[in-house]
Length: 426
Image (cartoon, rainbow, N blue to C red):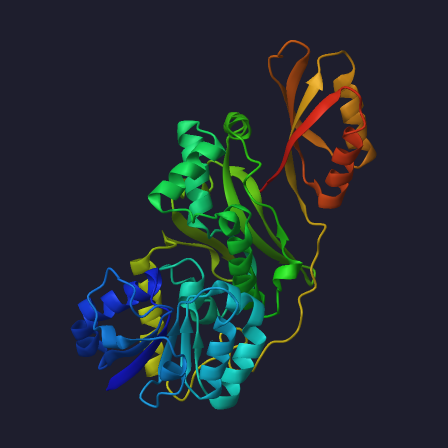
Protein backbone atom coordinates (compact mmCIF):
# COMPACT_ATOMS: atom_id res chain seq x y z
CA UNK A 1 0.00 0.00 0.00
CA UNK A 2 1.37 3.41 -0.95
CA UNK A 3 1.07 6.11 1.71
CA UNK A 4 1.33 9.78 0.72
CA UNK A 5 3.05 11.91 3.34
CA UNK A 6 3.24 15.70 3.55
CA UNK A 7 5.84 17.50 5.66
CA UNK A 8 5.28 20.73 7.55
CA UNK A 9 8.88 21.88 7.89
CA UNK A 10 12.11 20.38 6.61
CA UNK A 11 14.72 21.26 9.21
CA UNK A 12 16.88 18.93 11.28
CA UNK A 13 14.12 16.46 12.16
CA UNK A 14 12.34 16.68 8.81
CA UNK A 15 15.53 15.93 6.92
CA UNK A 16 16.19 13.04 9.33
CA UNK A 17 12.78 11.54 8.61
CA UNK A 18 13.33 11.97 4.86
CA UNK A 19 16.72 10.20 5.09
CA UNK A 20 15.26 7.32 7.10
CA UNK A 21 12.48 6.77 4.57
CA UNK A 22 15.02 6.97 1.75
CA UNK A 23 17.50 4.59 3.40
CA UNK A 24 15.07 2.07 4.91
CA UNK A 25 12.04 2.46 2.66
CA UNK A 26 12.49 -0.88 0.93
CA UNK A 27 12.93 -2.69 4.24
CA UNK A 28 9.81 -0.97 5.63
CA UNK A 29 7.82 -1.97 2.53
CA UNK A 30 9.02 -5.56 2.77
CA UNK A 31 8.34 -5.84 6.50
CA UNK A 32 5.20 -3.69 6.87
CA UNK A 33 3.67 -3.74 3.39
CA UNK A 34 3.82 0.06 3.22
CA UNK A 35 5.45 2.20 0.53
CA UNK A 36 6.06 5.57 2.25
CA UNK A 37 6.19 8.44 -0.25
CA UNK A 38 6.95 12.04 0.70
CA UNK A 39 4.87 14.12 -1.73
CA UNK A 40 5.30 17.73 -0.58
CA UNK A 41 7.20 19.63 2.12
CA UNK A 42 6.24 23.09 3.37
CA UNK A 43 9.27 25.35 3.90
CA UNK A 44 9.84 29.07 4.38
CA UNK A 45 12.38 29.36 1.56
CA UNK A 46 12.14 26.91 -1.34
CA UNK A 47 15.52 28.10 -2.69
CA UNK A 48 17.49 27.42 0.49
CA UNK A 49 20.36 24.95 0.08
CA UNK A 50 19.90 21.84 2.22
CA UNK A 51 22.26 19.07 3.16
CA UNK A 52 19.95 16.43 1.73
CA UNK A 53 19.68 15.09 -1.82
CA UNK A 54 16.07 15.85 -2.69
CA UNK A 55 14.06 16.91 -5.74
CA UNK A 56 13.55 20.72 -5.43
CA UNK A 57 10.01 20.22 -6.70
CA UNK A 58 9.17 18.61 -3.38
CA UNK A 59 9.26 21.98 -1.62
CA UNK A 60 6.45 24.52 -1.44
CA UNK A 61 5.84 27.74 0.45
CA UNK A 62 2.05 27.28 0.31
CA UNK A 63 0.58 25.25 3.20
CA UNK A 64 -2.45 24.33 1.08
CA UNK A 65 -0.20 22.19 -1.12
CA UNK A 66 0.15 19.90 1.90
CA UNK A 67 -3.11 20.40 3.79
CA UNK A 68 -5.47 20.18 0.79
CA UNK A 69 -3.75 17.50 -1.32
CA UNK A 70 -6.08 14.44 -1.46
CA UNK A 71 -3.06 12.26 -2.17
CA UNK A 72 -1.59 13.06 1.25
CA UNK A 73 -3.17 11.02 4.06
CA UNK A 74 -0.52 11.64 6.75
CA UNK A 75 0.91 15.03 7.68
CA UNK A 76 4.21 15.08 9.59
CA UNK A 77 4.84 18.35 11.46
CA UNK A 78 8.36 19.54 12.40
CA UNK A 79 7.88 23.32 12.58
CA UNK A 80 8.21 23.69 16.33
CA UNK A 81 6.52 26.33 18.48
CA UNK A 82 2.83 26.74 19.16
CA UNK A 83 1.89 28.78 16.07
CA UNK A 84 1.34 28.36 13.20
CA UNK A 85 1.85 24.67 13.98
CA UNK A 86 -1.41 24.46 15.96
CA UNK A 87 -3.40 26.02 13.10
CA UNK A 88 -1.92 23.70 10.48
CA UNK A 89 -2.29 20.56 12.60
CA UNK A 90 -5.89 21.46 13.41
CA UNK A 91 -6.73 22.04 9.76
CA UNK A 92 -5.14 18.74 8.75
CA UNK A 93 -7.12 16.85 11.40
CA UNK A 94 -10.37 18.58 10.40
CA UNK A 95 -9.75 17.34 6.83
CA UNK A 96 -9.41 13.78 8.18
CA UNK A 97 -5.64 13.61 7.71
CA UNK A 98 -3.67 11.85 10.43
CA UNK A 99 -0.97 14.01 12.02
CA UNK A 100 2.40 12.85 13.35
CA UNK A 101 4.35 15.52 15.23
CA UNK A 102 7.58 15.99 17.16
CA UNK A 103 6.31 19.28 18.63
CA UNK A 104 6.17 19.07 22.44
CA UNK A 105 5.02 22.68 22.89
CA UNK A 106 1.94 22.44 20.68
CA UNK A 107 0.94 19.07 22.19
CA UNK A 108 1.47 20.19 25.81
CA UNK A 109 -0.54 23.39 25.38
CA UNK A 110 -3.21 22.41 22.83
CA UNK A 111 -3.77 18.66 23.06
CA UNK A 112 -7.45 18.80 24.19
CA UNK A 113 -8.39 20.87 21.14
CA UNK A 114 -6.30 18.76 18.78
CA UNK A 115 -7.47 15.42 20.12
CA UNK A 116 -11.11 16.52 19.94
CA UNK A 117 -10.62 17.45 16.27
CA UNK A 118 -9.01 14.05 15.62
CA UNK A 119 -11.87 12.25 17.38
CA UNK A 120 -14.53 14.05 15.31
CA UNK A 121 -13.05 13.06 11.95
CA UNK A 122 -11.55 9.71 12.94
CA UNK A 123 -8.03 10.94 12.16
CA UNK A 124 -5.02 9.96 14.24
CA UNK A 125 -2.81 12.21 16.38
CA UNK A 126 0.62 10.73 17.14
CA UNK A 127 3.48 12.36 19.03
CA UNK A 128 6.03 9.76 20.14
CA UNK A 129 8.88 12.05 19.03
CA UNK A 130 7.69 14.94 21.21
CA UNK A 131 9.28 13.46 24.36
CA UNK A 132 12.75 11.91 24.67
CA UNK A 133 13.54 11.65 20.95
CA UNK A 134 14.05 8.02 19.97
CA UNK A 135 13.07 6.58 23.38
CA UNK A 136 9.65 4.87 22.93
CA UNK A 137 8.10 6.25 26.12
CA UNK A 138 4.76 7.45 24.67
CA UNK A 139 3.78 4.02 23.30
CA UNK A 140 4.86 2.43 26.57
CA UNK A 141 2.62 4.82 28.50
CA UNK A 142 -0.36 4.35 26.17
CA UNK A 143 -0.12 0.59 25.67
CA UNK A 144 2.46 -1.37 27.65
CA UNK A 145 1.58 0.17 31.03
CA UNK A 146 -2.19 0.28 30.65
CA UNK A 147 -2.63 -2.51 33.23
CA UNK A 148 -1.02 -0.26 35.86
CA UNK A 149 -1.71 2.82 37.86
CA UNK A 150 1.40 4.94 37.45
CA UNK A 151 2.53 6.22 40.83
CA UNK A 152 5.61 8.21 39.94
CA UNK A 153 7.61 9.58 37.01
CA UNK A 154 11.14 10.88 37.40
CA UNK A 155 13.16 11.61 34.29
CA UNK A 156 16.03 13.31 32.52
CA UNK A 157 14.30 14.50 29.37
CA UNK A 158 16.51 17.32 28.12
CA UNK A 159 19.86 16.39 26.59
CA UNK A 160 21.33 19.90 26.65
CA UNK A 161 21.05 20.36 30.40
CA UNK A 162 22.23 16.82 31.07
CA UNK A 163 25.29 17.40 28.90
CA UNK A 164 26.09 20.61 30.80
CA UNK A 165 25.65 19.10 34.27
CA UNK A 166 27.62 15.97 33.30
CA UNK A 167 30.57 18.04 32.07
CA UNK A 168 30.48 20.30 35.13
CA UNK A 169 30.51 17.24 37.37
CA UNK A 170 33.16 15.25 35.48
CA UNK A 171 35.53 18.09 34.64
CA UNK A 172 34.91 20.72 37.32
CA UNK A 173 34.20 23.45 34.76
CA UNK A 174 31.79 26.34 35.26
CA UNK A 175 28.26 26.52 33.89
CA UNK A 176 29.19 29.39 31.56
CA UNK A 177 32.20 27.55 30.13
CA UNK A 178 30.33 24.31 29.45
CA UNK A 179 27.33 26.14 27.99
CA UNK A 180 29.63 27.89 25.49
CA UNK A 181 31.07 24.49 24.54
CA UNK A 182 27.56 23.00 24.16
CA UNK A 183 26.70 25.80 21.72
CA UNK A 184 29.84 25.14 19.67
CA UNK A 185 29.06 21.42 19.48
CA UNK A 186 25.42 21.98 18.56
CA UNK A 187 24.00 20.52 21.80
CA UNK A 188 22.62 23.95 22.75
CA UNK A 189 20.76 26.46 20.62
CA UNK A 190 22.24 29.95 20.07
CA UNK A 191 19.53 31.09 22.50
CA UNK A 192 19.50 28.23 25.02
CA UNK A 193 16.82 29.69 27.32
CA UNK A 194 14.19 27.03 26.57
CA UNK A 195 16.60 24.30 27.64
CA UNK A 196 18.57 25.76 30.53
CA UNK A 197 15.56 27.37 32.21
CA UNK A 198 13.59 24.11 32.13
CA UNK A 199 10.85 25.15 29.66
CA UNK A 200 11.54 22.28 27.24
CA UNK A 201 11.44 19.80 30.13
CA UNK A 202 8.24 21.39 31.47
CA UNK A 203 6.39 20.84 28.16
CA UNK A 204 7.53 17.22 28.03
CA UNK A 205 6.53 16.58 31.65
CA UNK A 206 3.07 18.02 30.94
CA UNK A 207 2.64 15.39 28.20
CA UNK A 208 4.00 12.48 30.23
CA UNK A 209 2.08 13.33 33.40
CA UNK A 210 -1.19 13.91 31.51
CA UNK A 211 -0.83 10.47 29.93
CA UNK A 212 0.33 8.71 33.08
CA UNK A 213 -2.41 10.07 35.33
CA UNK A 214 -5.14 10.49 32.66
CA UNK A 215 -5.84 14.06 33.68
CA UNK A 216 -4.78 17.38 32.22
CA UNK A 217 -1.52 18.52 33.78
CA UNK A 218 -1.15 21.97 32.26
CA UNK A 219 2.21 23.69 31.98
CA UNK A 220 0.89 26.41 34.30
CA UNK A 221 0.57 23.83 37.09
CA UNK A 222 4.20 22.67 36.85
CA UNK A 223 6.81 24.22 39.13
CA UNK A 224 9.85 25.12 37.03
CA UNK A 225 13.42 26.04 37.89
CA UNK A 226 16.41 25.93 35.53
CA UNK A 227 20.09 25.11 35.99
CA UNK A 228 21.71 28.52 35.43
CA UNK A 229 22.21 29.02 39.19
CA UNK A 230 24.05 25.70 39.69
CA UNK A 231 27.76 26.05 40.46
CA UNK A 232 30.70 23.69 40.55
CA UNK A 233 30.79 24.22 44.32
CA UNK A 234 27.23 22.86 44.68
CA UNK A 235 28.14 19.80 42.63
CA UNK A 236 31.36 19.13 44.55
CA UNK A 237 29.67 19.42 47.94
CA UNK A 238 26.97 17.08 46.65
CA UNK A 239 29.62 14.54 45.70
CA UNK A 240 30.96 14.59 49.26
CA UNK A 241 27.46 13.65 50.39
CA UNK A 242 27.20 10.82 47.82
CA UNK A 243 24.86 12.80 45.57
CA UNK A 244 24.75 13.52 41.82
CA UNK A 245 23.17 16.58 40.18
CA UNK A 246 20.56 16.27 37.42
CA UNK A 247 17.73 18.41 36.03
CA UNK A 248 14.73 16.20 36.71
CA UNK A 249 11.11 16.15 35.64
CA UNK A 250 9.12 14.75 38.55
CA UNK A 251 5.44 13.84 38.81
CA UNK A 252 3.86 11.91 41.68
CA UNK A 253 0.31 11.12 42.69
CA UNK A 254 -0.74 10.83 46.31
CA UNK A 255 -4.16 11.08 47.97
CA UNK A 256 -5.80 12.29 44.77
CA UNK A 257 -3.35 15.17 44.25
CA UNK A 258 -0.46 15.51 41.83
CA UNK A 259 2.88 17.15 42.30
CA UNK A 260 4.55 18.16 39.04
CA UNK A 261 7.91 19.89 39.08
CA UNK A 262 11.05 20.55 37.05
CA UNK A 263 14.20 21.61 38.88
CA UNK A 264 17.86 20.76 39.55
CA UNK A 265 17.87 17.77 41.86
CA UNK A 266 20.43 15.86 43.89
CA UNK A 267 19.94 12.09 43.69
CA UNK A 268 22.06 9.31 45.24
CA UNK A 269 25.01 8.32 43.08
CA UNK A 270 23.62 4.76 43.25
CA UNK A 271 20.33 5.79 41.58
CA UNK A 272 19.95 4.53 37.97
CA UNK A 273 19.41 8.09 36.73
CA UNK A 274 22.80 9.15 38.14
CA UNK A 275 24.47 6.97 35.48
CA UNK A 276 22.75 8.86 32.63
CA UNK A 277 25.38 11.18 31.20
CA UNK A 278 25.99 13.62 28.39
CA UNK A 279 23.03 14.16 26.03
CA UNK A 280 21.23 10.90 26.83
CA UNK A 281 17.68 10.82 28.24
CA UNK A 282 16.11 8.42 30.71
CA UNK A 283 12.68 8.12 32.29
CA UNK A 284 12.20 6.23 35.56
CA UNK A 285 8.60 5.04 36.10
CA UNK A 286 6.98 3.33 39.06
CA UNK A 287 3.79 1.35 38.39
CA UNK A 288 1.63 -0.24 41.07
CA UNK A 289 1.85 -3.67 39.43
CA UNK A 290 5.02 -3.66 37.33
CA UNK A 291 7.23 -1.89 39.88
CA UNK A 292 10.19 0.16 38.69
CA UNK A 293 11.07 0.60 35.01
CA UNK A 294 13.63 2.78 33.25
CA UNK A 295 13.67 3.81 29.59
CA UNK A 296 17.01 5.05 28.24
CA UNK A 297 18.37 6.35 24.95
CA UNK A 298 19.13 9.28 22.70
CA UNK A 299 16.78 12.12 23.51
CA UNK A 300 17.51 14.30 20.49
CA UNK A 301 19.11 14.32 17.06
CA UNK A 302 17.72 14.06 13.56
CA UNK A 303 17.92 10.26 13.28
CA UNK A 304 16.79 9.15 16.78
CA UNK A 305 13.89 11.62 16.69
CA UNK A 306 13.21 10.79 13.04
CA UNK A 307 13.08 7.11 14.00
CA UNK A 308 10.23 7.86 16.42
CA UNK A 309 8.38 9.86 13.74
CA UNK A 310 8.63 7.07 11.15
CA UNK A 311 7.54 4.54 13.77
CA UNK A 312 4.43 6.66 14.38
CA UNK A 313 3.75 6.89 10.65
CA UNK A 314 3.87 3.09 10.36
CA UNK A 315 1.62 2.67 13.41
CA UNK A 316 -0.84 5.21 12.00
CA UNK A 317 -1.07 3.26 8.73
CA UNK A 318 -1.81 0.01 10.55
CA UNK A 319 -4.36 1.73 12.84
CA UNK A 320 -6.27 3.37 9.99
CA UNK A 321 -9.95 3.64 10.95
CA UNK A 322 -9.29 2.74 14.58
CA UNK A 323 -6.90 5.35 15.92
CA UNK A 324 -6.56 5.39 19.69
CA UNK A 325 -6.69 8.60 21.74
CA UNK A 326 -3.28 8.77 23.42
CA UNK A 327 -4.37 10.75 26.49
CA UNK A 328 -7.64 9.05 27.33
CA UNK A 329 -7.52 5.79 25.42
CA UNK A 330 -10.78 4.97 23.67
CA UNK A 331 -12.89 6.82 26.24
CA UNK A 332 -12.64 10.18 24.50
CA UNK A 333 -10.88 13.40 25.38
CA UNK A 334 -9.81 13.85 29.00
CA UNK A 335 -10.67 17.43 29.98
CA UNK A 336 -10.40 17.19 33.76
CA UNK A 337 -7.71 19.45 35.21
CA UNK A 338 -5.34 17.81 37.66
CA UNK A 339 -5.50 18.86 41.30
CA UNK A 340 -1.95 20.11 41.85
CA UNK A 341 -0.18 20.00 45.20
CA UNK A 342 2.35 22.84 45.32
CA UNK A 343 3.55 21.96 48.80
CA UNK A 344 5.30 18.64 48.22
CA UNK A 345 7.68 16.97 50.65
CA UNK A 346 11.32 16.26 49.89
CA UNK A 347 14.77 16.63 51.38
CA UNK A 348 16.75 19.82 50.78
CA UNK A 349 20.37 20.84 50.29
CA UNK A 350 21.05 24.39 51.49
CA UNK A 351 24.39 26.18 51.03
CA UNK A 352 25.09 29.39 52.92
CA UNK A 353 28.02 31.73 53.34
CA UNK A 354 28.09 32.92 56.95
CA UNK A 355 30.20 35.18 59.14
CA UNK A 356 32.61 33.03 61.11
CA UNK A 357 31.33 33.86 64.60
CA UNK A 358 30.19 31.76 67.57
CA UNK A 359 26.46 31.16 67.77
CA UNK A 360 25.69 31.35 64.03
CA UNK A 361 24.83 27.66 63.74
CA UNK A 362 22.48 27.91 66.72
CA UNK A 363 20.60 30.84 65.15
CA UNK A 364 20.14 28.97 61.86
CA UNK A 365 19.07 25.81 63.68
CA UNK A 366 16.51 27.89 65.52
CA UNK A 367 14.99 29.08 62.24
CA UNK A 368 14.81 25.51 60.97
CA UNK A 369 13.05 24.45 64.17
CA UNK A 370 10.58 27.34 63.96
CA UNK A 371 9.44 26.09 60.54
CA UNK A 372 9.35 22.38 61.42
CA UNK A 373 12.39 21.52 59.29
CA UNK A 374 14.63 18.80 60.70
CA UNK A 375 18.38 18.84 59.96
CA UNK A 376 19.91 15.56 58.79
CA UNK A 377 23.54 16.68 58.41
CA UNK A 378 25.74 19.78 58.50
CA UNK A 379 29.07 20.41 56.77
CA UNK A 380 31.22 23.39 57.74
CA UNK A 381 34.16 23.95 55.41
CA UNK A 382 37.35 25.92 55.88
CA UNK A 383 36.75 29.63 56.10
CA UNK A 384 37.99 32.50 53.94
CA UNK A 385 39.06 35.30 56.27
CA UNK A 386 35.80 36.30 58.01
CA UNK A 387 33.31 34.01 56.25
CA UNK A 388 32.80 30.27 55.88
CA UNK A 389 30.57 28.01 53.79
CA UNK A 390 27.90 26.11 55.68
CA UNK A 391 25.98 23.23 54.05
CA UNK A 392 22.82 21.63 55.42
CA UNK A 393 20.89 18.58 54.27
CA UNK A 394 17.45 18.26 55.79
CA UNK A 395 15.15 15.36 56.43
CA UNK A 396 11.94 15.41 54.39
CA UNK A 397 10.21 18.74 54.81
CA UNK A 398 7.39 20.64 53.16
CA UNK A 399 8.38 22.90 50.27
CA UNK A 400 6.63 25.98 51.63
CA UNK A 401 8.08 25.50 55.13
CA UNK A 402 11.57 25.33 53.67
CA UNK A 403 11.05 28.46 51.60
CA UNK A 404 9.83 30.36 54.67
CA UNK A 405 12.83 29.17 56.66
CA UNK A 406 15.24 30.36 53.95
CA UNK A 407 13.48 33.72 53.79
CA UNK A 408 13.85 34.14 57.57
CA UNK A 409 17.56 33.30 57.33
CA UNK A 410 18.07 36.30 55.06
CA UNK A 411 17.39 38.45 58.12
CA UNK A 412 20.09 36.83 60.28
CA UNK A 413 22.95 39.38 60.29
CA UNK A 414 25.61 36.65 60.24
CA UNK A 415 24.20 35.04 57.07
CA UNK A 416 26.17 36.82 54.33
CA UNK A 417 24.57 34.97 51.39
CA UNK A 418 22.06 32.24 50.61
CA UNK A 419 24.13 30.53 47.90
CA UNK A 420 21.69 27.85 46.76
CA UNK A 421 18.67 25.75 47.73
CA UNK A 422 18.47 22.42 45.89
CA UNK A 423 15.95 19.62 46.34
CA UNK A 424 17.09 16.06 47.07
CA UNK A 425 15.22 12.93 45.90
CA UNK A 426 16.11 9.52 47.35
